[in-house]
Image (tube, rainbow, N blue to C red; front, side):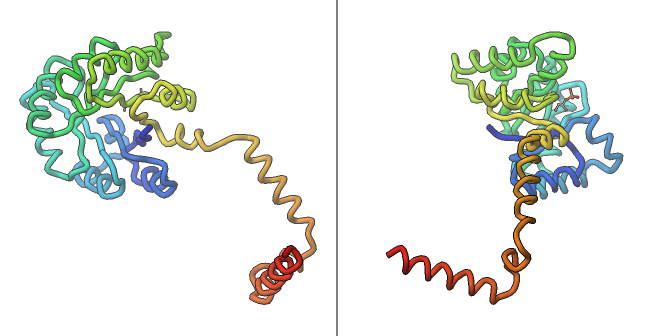
Length: 240
Ligand code: G3P
């Protein structure tokens, strides 16, 4: 499963890239607005920072406006994927942009019927918002299950990009269901790493290590390394 960072914050993106953790980035108008800077230069910088798809959402409400914006975004960088909302106008724009080989991520998807139409419009990705469904006591991951079934039934090539991810279990469940990708805030990505037993185990290893006498722990001096190598050769001779 691909992991995308749902952020327009360059520091977060750079950190996530440094772990080798992410395959792309998704943004939306709210995330870009949070950064409070000119969004085209920011978008270009993000595209140059991550080696994968970068989703940027159109602002127009009509298909013609979305197509104009989508064409302009696509010219910015090969990584760009244009985000259009799951509305009639958004589907019309998706159809036109996909026919021009411009990848579209159809966003704000909340039902299987919407996902079916996104695939028929030629979307490269569909973004079902699982967290916002959970927030209203609907079954967010159930939507992913339904979309997976529908797309498999008709061999749609549209990729399922699980969005509005709130916690690690959304990510694990998305992977269990075979979603193509999940996009998440940096805090959720960080929570994927953390486990109390890892922290406790590391503390214990290092505490035990500290019990060694200083000379046994020395590894930086060249003599320490050569002694170790000599000891190893000696052991090899004994073991023959
Ligand atoms: O990419 C969509 C995502 O940003 C929406 O997440 O937490 O605002 O529901 P959220």
